[in-house]
Length: 218
Image (cartoon, rainbow, N blue to C red; front, side):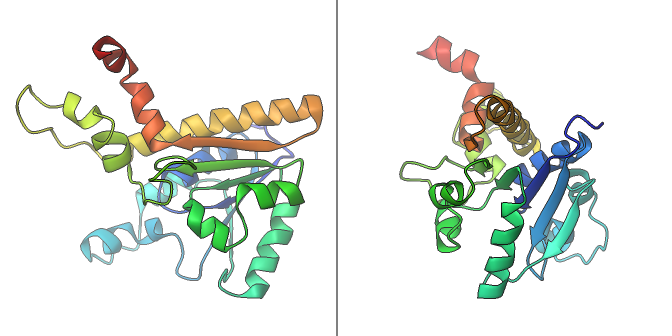
């Protein structure tokens, strides 16, 4: 598709929920540039990282990173950080699922980045949101989406252990939520010329998915 032809997305993320959103945007025609360290997104080496098996292919990585370009930058160096700043200056969307504390160390927090790029759509994908006591806690879908919300409990028999939930499902739901926010922010920018921060989190997406049950209980 070419719905987003002419739009550029700079993606600074790893694993699933952030890159998953970038994959959908690339499907729709956006120029998505994935920024990686020299070792690359761990999903490239999924089977080695999780099980020590040196399998060169990673179908999960291919799924969520289809259609993108990639650049390697050393963000520990001033040169690498400067290069990333210049790249973001050319973008319509900055998409990231790094934790807030990591982004602050890189001076890529929403406030600083949007002040430098007022038309930018800054899309944050996190485990637990940008505020609150768990903002800097690593978030994975089995925990933040599945366990913390009650999704995992609902998939088990009453008074029994929860059944196993396949990794990636909560990540992909959250990725689609992020895409929705990005598209809405781009539409708003067409009206007023201003970018903004949009957020998606595994916790919020999980709560929405079992919203019927929570509403009935409340």
